[in-house]
Image (cartoon, rainbow, N blue to C red; front, side):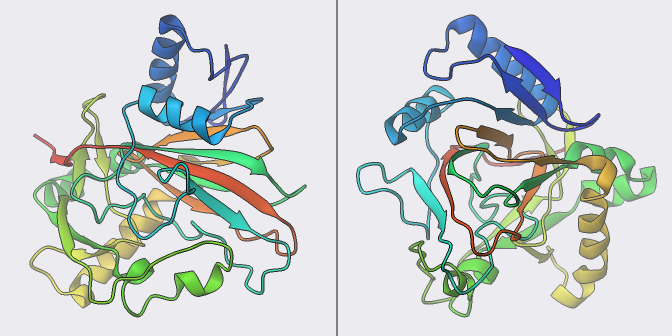
Length: 280
């Protein structure tokens, strides 16, 4: 197993590993690399949906996946497909976000496997939210440590959401009424590394607790822009047979919509997470 960091702060590419034949030492090495790099891009795999589910169970078991329709035989495997002849260039996952933070127990990890990719384009960007927290002033850290934020699926999956209109070959279900909201700490303590991360995102975080959306907007915008500063980011270029695993407890990510007219097919699963905990 060869590990090559993608940047100084986030991401690593792994070769020389067969995910269908992981022994205990390889799994331990994978866990260490995941804690160190947050995003692991594992090349040269040959996975079926059954293999992907086996790996998902090995890494902790699948999380709940509302709104999205999975494969008939493997409902926890969601096909993310963009056909070459679709009208909209919009890609599923475009826009910076952390997966499903509107849940009580958001995913701990996401797995995304590339089945078919364009010759160029369709990359995914990732941002390190540990590094964003570390970059805050002591005064800002103190102010945010006691804050909770309100998370909601309304922008993507609420009654007025238009995401599904751009994705002709995915089955997405909108809520018929405003979805429930969740309160999560703005500064989240990672349950494995015990490191604090700035844990908000522009897709699902709609305001701070006990503040209006208008009052919250300037600070949320500032923090979200800080998180995606270039020095905190990496970029994964996909190719068929690549599996990328990322840590939703300390990262944001964003798919690029720059391959209109070309086909891209991915398979997605999530690993069940825990209730986010505030910094001690």
